[in-house]
Image (tube, helix red, strand yellow):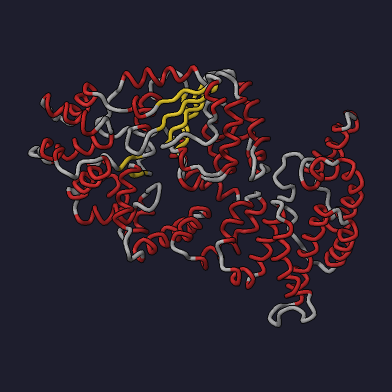
Length: 583
């Protein structure tokens, strides 16, 4: 993604780095505050419970009075990608590790999509240098499915200094939690038992709504609601609207269980809204964050921001997420309820909304969000267009996993029709190590442009040469995987001829397979220095005859190579030269 797009993205979702605002009627729960205070004795604290048990609200209330810095990252479904995840974590840590956000963009840029170990190692060093106690909260961590995120977060927690703490909020324990890790004493767990509302807390909660409960009603709520925070809030919202609501008869009815009461009481919430408010909430429930213009896109209205503000003032399940009041979200349980109302045998309404959301995100240059919503409505044509326009940029940032995910969802015939899609898919596969699979898509272009039948009639000679150059560029790098020096020399020779015919190419792809170290990556043969020693002359030929400018790679490789051989003076000389060329 281009830097401008990244900057815009960060502006949009800075709200995910805010400690969430507390909804109406929050009760300060001393018992739970004390439990969270004790969490500072461990590196990792897990706050886990099903939806609606007030996990986020409780931790946010504690964070505001914790007495030490607490930084926050609220995850959503779009953050299930290691680079994106760690970019947010680094941004979240800036207040407690000043300058870290400026130090790490290049580390994130070069991070391997399948592991973030170099990034985590550097982050541990920064934490150790800081020396001050702080807590990093990761909210809704159950949304993470990427094994690379789990593995790298586990590594961070294992090696980070004792003054650093991570607090994970989710509906289940993370998969990296092992028996050995738990026995180490570095983990504290806070679950349903601690989160359940007790009688005294229920009474304080009801007073926040100006509701007086009798002793029997209080006991009834404690027994039947079983301390479920969302259930209590729904009951009190309903009582505030209808003082005649009979809790005893409701509790005795067959509808009373955790799922059915949620549905029943949320229908009460919806029922108290006007028809236009109900339609507004249903249509906007498909997105994780809401702002006025996005809501206008989804609803066809022009007063989206005013509607959000009004709903937030009167509905405990519409929450602001920034101080400016621009961004909002629905309580997760409420969002799921609203989305269920949209679901049905006719998916056309939901599909239409996802398409509109994708259009809004695309116009505002939020590529991943746009593709996510287009996938939901099976608009593969839009995803293909995104890939044709932005695929090269994603190759530069090393987002191979995202590219492969999106491209694999396209019909193969659609990919074959497009030169840009074939090239993007081939590069994404090759640079992530799937060389043989990449050959499938490169061969499509070779048959089309270099086969016996010649290039397509509609293509011009310049287009043919451009594609041929890219094929040889690909082959020259693929030869490193197979140690095929003859193939590399043939490709370099043809690339030199094409450059002499004024064909140009973008050499800024992330060809080092994500490694921060050149020697550790593809160009360094994964650390096989003896083989690298033999290939440096070939790199020099390519630089002189094809790239035709100094870009720092060769002296950097030589500097690392000498460093690995404990030849510090030679390493220093080459690395200084690499810095000069890079500038």
